[in-house]
Amino acid sequence: MAGLYIHIPFCKRRCVYCDFYSNTDMSLKSRYIDALIAEMRSRQDAFRKESVETIYVGGGTPSQLDETDFARLFDAISALTFSSSWKEVTVEVNPDDLSVGYIEMLRSFPFNRISMGVQSFDDADLSFLNRRHTARQAIEAVKNCRKAGWDNISMDLIYGLPGQTLDAWERNLRMALRLETPHLSCYHLTYEEGTVLYDRLQSGQIREVCEEESVAMFSLLMDCLQNAGYEHYEISNFARPGFRSRHNSSYWHDKTYIGIGASAHSYDGAFRQWNVADIREYIRQADSGRFSPERERIDPDMRYNDTIITALRTSEGLDIAQLGCRFGEERKNYCLLQAQPFIAAGTLILEGEILRLSRTGIFVSDTIMSSLLFVGDD
Image (cartoon, rainbow, N blue to C red; front, side):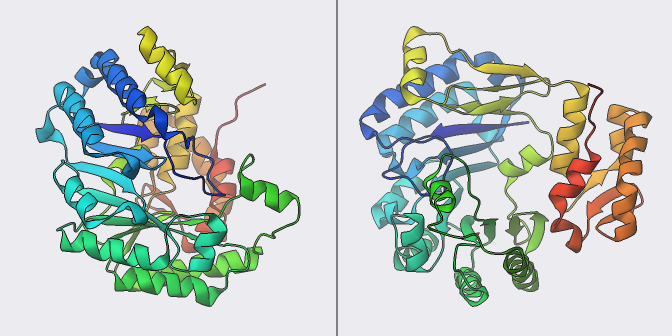
C-alpha cells in the first residue's frame, strides 16, 4: 500500500517561521491544478504498482482551493486509483477559511480527516507568527467541524516562542483538550535559514527560549496529554486510541509514497525523487509534457540510516531482529554496540529485540540517532 501526497503551495500570506515551499500569487491556481493533473497522468505506472491507502492534501494552504478545484483533483485521482482502498483522506486547512459553507463543501468530497493549523490560542502569539486567524476563529472552526460531523480532527500547535511562559503553553494545551481534539501535532519553534523569523533572530530582534524552558515545555506537553489518555506515538505526535495519522505513519514505517506538485517528494523503496520548488517552472514542465524531477538511488547505508532515524522517532521503536534481517548481522551488531552507552545511561531502552527511546532519551534524541548512524569510509 502507498500514500499519495498532493502539494498545494498557495498561501494568502507567509508565516514568519515557514520554510515549506509556497507562493502568494493566486492567479496561478487554475494552471497549477492543470499541472497537478498532468503529473498524475504522467505517472500512471507508479500508481499501478501499489494501491493508494492514504491521501494527504497539504501545503501551503489547501483551504485556498474551491469546490471546482477539489472536484478536478478527485476526478483525476479516481481515474488512477480505487477509492475502495482509501483508508484515510486528509486535507490541511486554516481556521479562518472554515466558514460553515466551506466545511459543508469539504464534506461532499472523500475527506475523512482534517488537519488544522491552529498553532496557538493566544492572539499575541498568532500576530507574532503572522497567522491570519484569531484564537476565537480557531475555536469556532473546531466546533463547526464537529457540528458538521467531523470526528477525525488533527491540530497543529507550536511552543517555545520568544517570551512564551510555561503557564501560557499550558493554557494552549488545556484549550486543545477542552475542544476534545483527538490528534495533536506539537512542534517546538525552529529558526530555519531563509525565513523572516531567522533574520529576526540573527539581527537580535528576538531571542530563543533557553534549553531549560524548552525541556520544561516538552515535559508539560507529555504529562498533560498522556494523563488525558493520548498515545505519544511519535516524538511530536499524540493521538487518542484509533486516531493516529495513517499517512504520516507511512513515512516513519518505510512505506512507499507518491508526491505530486511543486517541491513534492516521492519514495518507492529504491529511489527518492523530488519536483522543482518553483510553481512557474513546474507549470512550464507540465505544459511541455515533460517533468524533470531530481532523483537519487538509496543505497543500503542510506536506507539503514533512514531506518534508524524514523523508527526511533516512534513509540514502537527499532526492531533489532528485523534490522539484522534487512541489513545483515554486521549492521545489527554495529547498532547495538553504538547503543550501549545510551542503554547504560538510561536514554535508550532495550526490551527483547526492541530498542526505543526512554522519556529522558527523547530530549537528546538527535544525539542518540546520529551516534547510531553508519558513516562509511572516506
